[in-house]
Image (cartoon, one colour):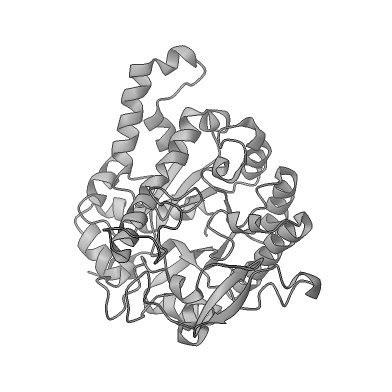
Length: 393
């Protein structure tokens, strides 16, 4: 049984590896020493933003690579699978894997655009976001019905964020990327009414808000955690495994805040998606919120909150899964209309098998993890819910 052959699968979390000259080719030369650019350091390519070394393109483009994260990755762009950065190659990859459509997220700017805060010039920060969104629009134009862009935001400026959402909606973008904990980046709390203009425009344009993992301070990661100079009994690979797992669960911070802080109550028609977070832990979080909601008497303090946390979740919050086997069946039984499938291509934690990894091909995972579920539920997980949330024909 090949479930991917039976459903028009929508992969709701993938990433486009940005080209080395994305910003230097589109912005004035006076800014080239500050904008993201690639430098080769000790025979490896790295992104540099405002003089500070950042991500290695290969470290977030490991699909098919014979190595394991975090320190084994394609050293240069020449070693990266073209499907990571070339739209035609991506479509060919999707055809090979029987994937109908993919939702597209960034890397360089950060999973909430927070990396642009490393630049002091306000005009430059805004220009960097706009350049990225224009690039992604062009990239997705290879097949706009299958490649679905997500709008990056200059979230530190609400007015410009509203304008950018409106502009990118006209360009065919399907969602809005927002940090799940903006307060970690010296901004107001996620539940603060300060952000209401953004929720207003997203609601009006029927665009879901995407909370991608990494849109908050890293849980459990101390300053210099991965520095060779820091002595620790925990090895680098063990640290990476711990950090990655905690990043998934970290999205519970945003989910719980929009529920308990009244955002879902104020914006009942706005959808929120917890991206690249997994879903098996969702039932425990939601059940705990219901229990503590009753225990603390939240309804007495906020009689206007007409729903329980579990009811807010069912109405307008979604989570994405791609690796779980033991827990996904129970989560799907409880929340069949709130879970969506992803591959996270081409990230190191993705469903993009390389010779050294334990990953499997997407259809093999689906058959093993979902095959015993009712046909209607499988259809929702692989296509129907994502089609509704992202307005896919």
